Image (cartoon, rainbow, N blue to C red; front, top):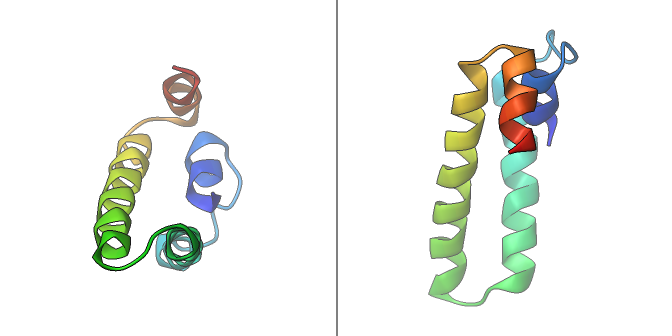
Length: 73
């Protein structure tokens, strides 16, 4: 995922968060769309999307070194 790379390394600093978020959520919705049916699809996307955004928000608040340690847990 692009934002995980952005916040755990010093790469992709010149790319905006919104562009990376669109890529990530499109991929996430595509994976969920193939594996879930009916209303469960939308519930799964809401849960997965919000959980992923919480992880990214936590990484934003830390330095790249602290973020690597967080992902290693």
